[in-house]
Length: 215
Image (cartoon, rainbow, N blue to C red):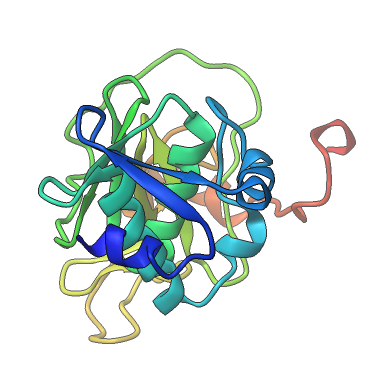
C-alpha cells in the first residue's frame, strides 16, 4: 500500500501484477534515468551516497520495502557493487550490515554486538614488508569476507578500542594493550621480549603517499 500510494504521486502511470508481485511504471524519462545505474551491475551513485544520514535512512528503508525484506531486514542482488553501496550506506546511518551467501545477500541489524577478536586465528608463513595502518583520526574501518568492523591500535578493558597508541587509557588511566604488526607479528606490544620491544620503539614511519618501491 505504501508503494502504491507513493507511485500515485508520480507523473507516470503504473500497473500492479499479482503473479509477479511487482509494479510496472511506463515513463521513458524515468527509464532513461534509472538505466544508467545498470542491470546486473546496478549501483547507488556517489552523489546519493553523500546525502545526509537522515536521507540515507529513508533510502535504505524504501529500498528494503521495494526490493528487499523488511521482515528479515535483508536484500539479495547479483550486483556486488550494489551490495557494497548498501553496506556503505548502512555504515553512514549507524547500522551494521554483513554480506553473506557467497556475496549475493546483505543482512542488516540494529544491534551493537561486539566482535570477538582472535576467535579464528592461525599463523601463516610470510616474507616481505609488513605495515601497521594509521590514519589521521586513528579510526580504521576494515572488512573481510563481507564482515566489517571498526578497529584501532590500542584496547582498554573498560572502554574497548582507543584512538591511537596508548599504553594507558586516556579516559580511565588504566593500562591498555597496544597492538602492532610492524615487526612481523600481531600481538600486544607488552608481551614482546626485550629485543622486539626495542625494534618497536625504533621503528620507521612512512607517509601513506610513499610507495614501497621508494622504501
